[in-house]
Amino acid sequence: MADLTPPPGAPEEVVTKALLRDVDLSLFGFSGTLSLITLDNGMDHTRPNTLGPQSLQSIDDAITAAEASTSAAIAITGKPFIFAAGADLSALPFVSEKSQALAIGKFGHDVFKKLGRSKKVTFAFINGLALGGGLEIGLHCNYRTLASTAFTALPECFLGIVPGWGGATLLPKLIGPERAVQVIIGNALNNNTMMKAKEALELGVVDAVFEPADFLERSCALAAGILSGSKKIERIDYTKDEASWEKAQSMGRAIV
Image: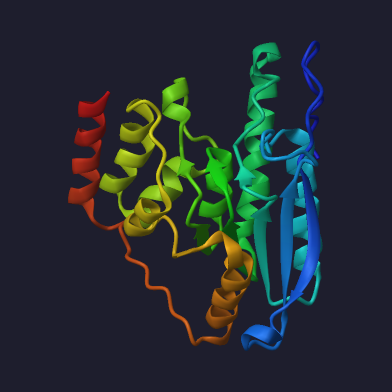
């Protein structure tokens, strides 16, 4: 791990732990297990999961352990009502060196990229609020489910920054550059508007929306279907649509 010692004067991090367990998918028609990582800071929903250096290290350790296991896939979810509310910004006012800021940014990238580059299929079961880095965790995964009551957003532009852990590059490739500009810039600068589940599904940010009561079970069932080949999720390749990218740039400039 890089030297991510908190800067002098910074408050102690509320650590979000990444708890790993195996889920038997045979009940859902697939012979194999799923490595399920649950993000939990040990507090109720009024204190959302956030992602500081120690939290990222816990996620990194869980992904490494899941990769080494015999499971067929890896999934990540959150504590009740909360997936993750993004980076822990409590130490930000105390950062005085460029190297400190770069270190935490790079470490987040290094951890999240493991989900996108894994040899195993990866899923984000977004059971609750997912903002900034929380949504970016999901974007690094191969597939995403979302609870019908959950809100998602990339609010960084509202704060005068950009999505720093992949959102600015992954979302345009997933849903197209024009839609991504609306989510990343338009929504953020429109009083920090968050997406409801229906909108996230219509835009293609997530692949399925389920009710909270049986969210985990239905998410596991979808994962089992994808792993068995009985369920297919089609993707559109937006990378070669130059006209769309140029239009998105014009849209972005007009918004700001």
